[in-house]
Image (tube, rainbow, N blue to C red; front, side, top):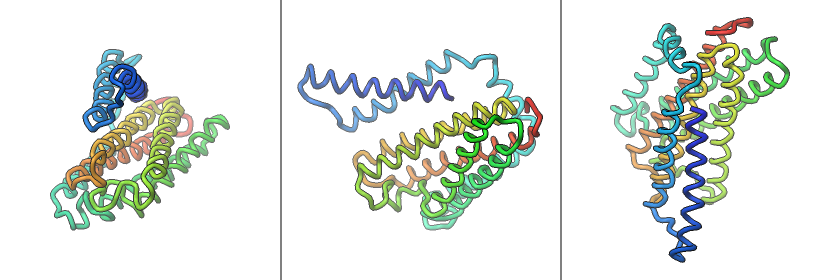
Length: 268
């Protein structure tokens, strides 16, 4: 996942910068219309996925993690609970408390509970004596950020963009800068924590690394959807909420796996 996100960011920035320079140099016009904007997001993602798939995973760690996850019954229970919330969210009426399009409702509560639980477990894992001072600091920062994200979501469900503007009532560019900073901080801390946790529990590290795909996917979905309108459609909100919930479930599963690995464990 780290490789894919790195390729996506690199290819996207390159396409946007090179395309803009060529447009201006050759056509004397900069094309920042909707079609060009979508291409700058989606085409690099496709190329990054293809390159990451060809590059593969060193040491077969991905397959081993899948096998390890399949052996853990508690992961199945978390998956069933999460699936129940998602199914109810898609089937419920838009104004229902269970709807994914609802500003504050059951999906939002479930998201916040998962992140808060992950933050608590992550902090307990960080206090174990096996870590160096620097590793413990990174893990504590990651747990604190997860708790902050939980509180933030408890009062502002970012999945329900059909009822509120993605950027609230703030001016567009400052609000966009804040959202992007929050996104990059979340992904960066998760990737750093996943690398540290992998030394004690490869399963925990893999789950946390995989979780970083979902906020990035939500950011791409929101960016494309709000390019020409201030809010997502109800269906777009449901998709955004589903992706956020899937990411939160992986964060919680990672924390549980790290906790279950034990203070002196070197594997999952």
